[in-house]
Length: 336
Ligand code: UT7
Image (tube, rainbow, N blue to C red):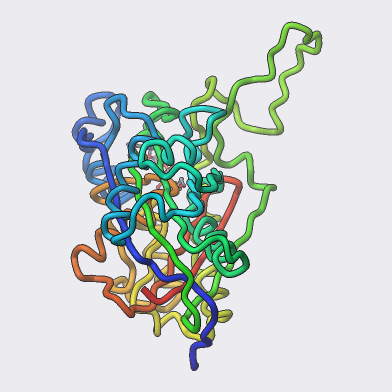
């Protein structure tokens, strides 16, 4: 198959940040009934970084600063900041405004998006569309920043062992005549399978005492709950399907990709996806053992480590693929 060239993105710079504090599987065995053996075999996770009070925007700003330096630009050059997060610090102001303030990029547009674990793919595609269609936007800062420890229920052993905190960022500019394709989607019918509740609608005038729960599972306040098996089933279908569809759009086959960077949720999901796609696990970039699942930050953190270790090089054809709450799914292909 000959790949088709399109208007796409140039990744000028990348950066990542994870908090210093680390929680190992042994640390979890002290707080819930679990073991290093169970967690390693069922998920591939060995440790994750967890904040010690640092807010989400701080993680994002640290990653953004590294990406800006890597790109060799100044913060004032940024025209648009897109921040993917499902764990913001405030309802308002947005994380993008807080990160803008922190890095000194006042004057840029600033938008938050919440697509859970697929947020970075969605953000990359939004950035590309802004860069392509608007002459005022030459440089985009795309950040994924997550502090999942805010809503993890540390008494639920089936979910608390999965998640970590972290952030990563790309500086993006427009590139003509390059490889680019995206395949994004969602199925809101699966909303109940992965959820963390915001504040309930209480107000002084309320007389209706019925709880508005939208067929969601029983939730403990704002804590995260999931149906692990349903999410697993969805993920093992959605990931290979999204890669196949985006490859079709790009006019290449999955074997022609140099690297696939999947959402880092469970190594068994990634192995099944590789098998269904007929590609070797060598193509799959997996660092779940180091960070656990950091939601929207998991794909770009893995990308940064793969670049640092020489597994992804300039000119490589890369696919970023994710699935997550919503339920959402997304895959993007580009040339690094
Ligand atoms: O970004 C997306 C986020 N969510 C996901 O990606 C979730 C996708 N799902 C999964 O990754 C897996 O379903 C889990 C890792 C959540 C669970 O793995 P599983 O192989 O599906 O285990 P299971 O739910 O079938 O549970 C098997 C057993 C159960 O015990 P019984 O009923 O067989 O006696 C669980 O109670 O394992 C038990 N179990 C644990 N045991 C030790 C569940 N969690 C643990 C634990 N340690 N942490």
